[in-house]
Length: 523
Image 1 (cartoon, one colour):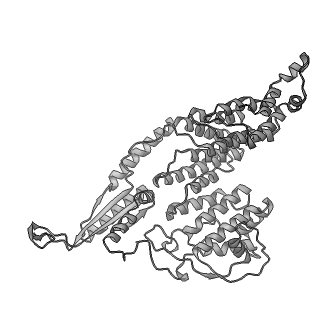
Image 2 (cartoon, one colour; image 1 turned 135 degrees about the vertical axis):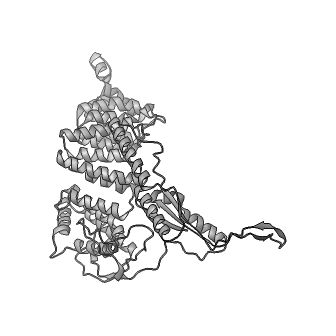
Image 3 (cartoon, rainbow, N blue to C red; image 1 turned 120 degrees about the vertical axis):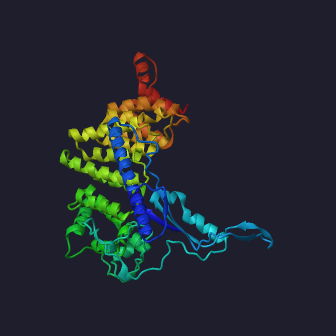
């Protein structure tokens, strides 16, 4: 049994069909279960595209079986050495038990999956256990191969420059290709050595370079440490390092030398996530050379090379695509790249209409500061999609990210509409949510917003299930919010003595009574 992975649903059928035709030309009878022929696949894809276009106009989420997404094709090459002659059959004790056809020969089967389906079924683990139980524990897993020498390693492109993807010898496509070792002997700088030992990035880059032997795990650790070191720098220093990595060839810095050596020692499929992280950092800081074109090259490399990434990395790519839109043709170009990327995610079995995708794109659009008609229309479409798609509750982490994005642009109507989302799903807010909103409003130093926040949120927190008590950090943030809403409330609550109408009115002030209630701790 051979296992292979296709990079998409379309590639699954095209590859399986090509394999079957190749085998039949050589006289091997091969059958493929789950295979769609070329014409049938074209018709179904055309119908699916037409349906997706209609659903896109209506705002509804696609669902149900589309007749294409099998995600798994089994190609059976038949049994070699199979005998059709009947023979006498014997039972376990050697006595005659009848006639039949003995199971002889070897059956060859090729299992072709999309990556998500392969992980879901995990047939390798299943058959490994069966073989071990049968006493054949010496069979190696199909992913285990002897390491190659350093001369067989592919060259890696630095940063986000365009890559030559036309040469198969320079890239690996799927898990059926040989896993290559990155055990090369280079001379890493002291910064690389230090970030491996101290990931915090506080490295003294003045030390002399020392020769070190590297492996894949070490190179990944070095690159992770260099990314942490970059994030610890000031904005100006980080931009200087990033731009030097793109443009400067002479007088390389310690960071540049260590980064390039580590990236060159890794296969491109393993260095991709580090190059993506660096490009996104450069794009957010506004460094020269980190443009949409460079991000497009990274996306194309992921699509053509079948690079698998985490869900968070997928969302990061979408956010980076929409970062700093200028509207018009630029936004159209970004949307085309985003749609191509989303099609790849859908083909890999990833959820496309999901809260993390929508919130991630909304965050990028909001933080870009673009207010042109096309950008605002896209934002409105995404906000409506969250409602019309009937998705489950997004969770508090995503909720607070969206709240923070709306607060950063001063869109308080959308802010409060998002804040009221949990009760619609019958979900209680946590103490962290109330701590966040009280702290946010107190830092704004805006009196009317603090007044509204205390009036609305104090009663809501007591009515949560379970109730959120005003204690600890929540109480501290609430008191700070009250001080801004009514600067004299705390002093009046401590000193007022009711003896006439004026003192009675002072004692009955809204935030004075609330302060006295908090002091009494009667909840």
